[in-house]
Amino acid sequence: MDQDGTTRVVVLDIESALDHATTALAQRPREDIKRWCLHRVVAAAVLSAERGADGTWANFSLDSWHSDGDEETLLVNLDAALRSVEAGDATLVTYNGRRHDLEVLRRRAGANLRMDLRSLATLRNLPRERHRDMMTIVCGNARDRLATLGDAVASMGTGIDPDGPLPFEVATPHVQRKCEADVVATFLLHLNEEALDSGRAIDLLAGWKALAGYLLPRARALPHLCHFALHPNARS
Image 1 (spheres, rainbow, N blue to C red):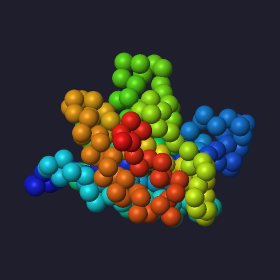
Image 2: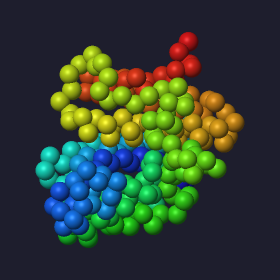
Image 3: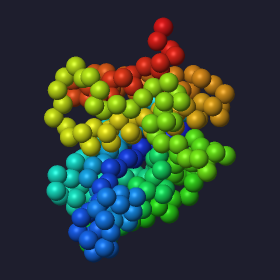
């Protein structure tokens, strides 16, 4: 938190897939996708925002990357985007990031001999107050029956559909659009859980409205995110 009471959040999501060379070395079948240690990073997205002392959200930014065969460049860009978290200037928000995203990023930084990417190498060690893993928070006492991000967002009355009917054509690859949709959904879950803890629906709705103010002017570039612009139970 800044001296003026401003807090920052950085929402992270990656998409990974089996790396065929690594899978062959491990002598595993190519369809054994659950073995995260054999994955490479194919896309990533980061959504950043600031909340003022008065609770107003502002200064949104969304960045995303697709490896397109160059995983190292993606990792370099992602490391730079996460430096504010490493420095302690922002809280990291993920969905299953503690068990998947941060572990995969650490392994792939090593596989690319980029041990200098300190954010990717060290963020798995963040204490819980600096890393809100929404899967753990959403599932609570039901964590033995873990929910997917899609399930958790559906419980709020909305959905994640980067391939739904779009008013504009989008050149961004599907896997990159999915990352973008996932970080927006994860941010909304973060707002929802904070509002449930505070007992104030306005904490959710004000943040949702601020997010819409960022997304809607960018509808032509981000049409797959426009359905997130309004809470489904606040349409009137």
